[in-house]
Image 1 (cartoon, one colour):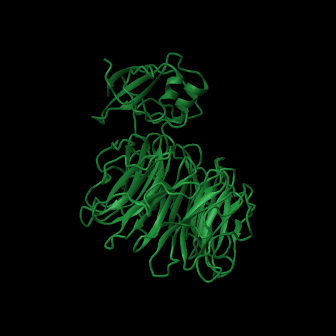
Image 2 (cartoon, one colour):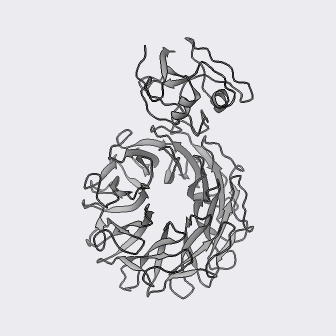
Image 3 (cartoon, one colour):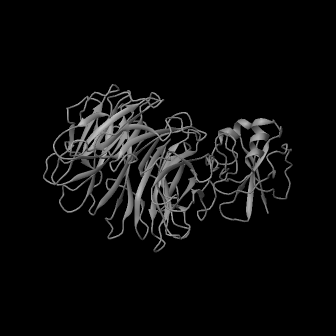
Length: 560
């Protein structure tokens, strides 16, 4: 018998098999469970389907310090248990931001008051093996008089980074920027280039690359000094020179407040901005605008509404599709007092691709807050914190293709459902249409948060799922030839698949890999891969009919 089954084999990155990621939502990978509070985690890709994480950590007393950890594609924690400190200097280290260095490591920026009561901006580069490679304690980016807050960072595309922050060296907050090369040397003026010096405060800058070594920057702007904020933007060249109007161009100056601007880069060097907008007078809505490299807008003056449904729309987050389009997600209380998660996809021409009022990502009972989104391949992955199960928050996720069709169970699949709260999720793509997620976790019930992480497979299962098959207990054992029989074999491990297929050339007649029946936890089937090439084509979690021509998979079915 050759039944139609789903190919759901836990294989990642050319042969890593059954991983250390737990395959149930009640368990997760502990990143830091030290004493004190660990919180405000951020992630960047390690370039190999894993992640580098950085967070604020109070394990040593009352001062927050920054720690970092790498978790690989299989869920293995790669560096020192509990994480590597980025700086052991005095004072507080707050608001870390992180971006990949393109070589398996990452750049991290933060605000730091080691010298006095004022906060300054520092940066550090950490290698793929957890070694800080710049000056011990970090490179000083700016220590001008007054506070420097809220740094943001983007790769410059040439091995370095561009950093932006809000700066109070002249009695009010303005936006400044600096570019560092791969060795940590500043390329622009000492203490940064002034981006805007208009009246009033300029706050909460965001930054994306312009694709030519410079950046597009947007911020919340109070220059009108009427208590209401607007959205402004500026492009700065690779040499640190402003490319648009000296104090920026107005993205939106509609009535009442516009704030919480977020940016996504577009493939042509332009940027898409989304923000919360109170022009209606009664509640926030989400608006969108696209600005090209010359500072010209593609949409209506002042932006267009992402959604015109009634109710409050908060916390928008955009993600580029890599082809000029963008997916926007937000939390929305149109149904009543509870917040739900909605999303919209805008094509490269700025037209809505999904229902006019947005795609309902999750409408479960209870609040859903703080959504995040990434786009990879032909789909968008969403995560959020979710209170559907009563008084405690869990983490849920949903995936939808770019036609607006959800791939998983209605209202999403659980990522983390441990005791007590799991909150403020952060997300990056795993580059195979799933994602790596990290969050603040209170499962220890100590009153302090820890950092946990999980990978969500493209099939909607934590770790990509749990499957029955064969095994070797030790990676050191030589791979043996599998004989197909009526008795089930045990779980696979990474060495079993890697060494057998990719390394030693065993199984000349093919490799049998087991899979779980979706309609029974006590039955399984197996797949016979006749060539290593077909295993590689099937990586990872691609849903295929068994026996399909594309993979030339042969299968039989057995019961335990």
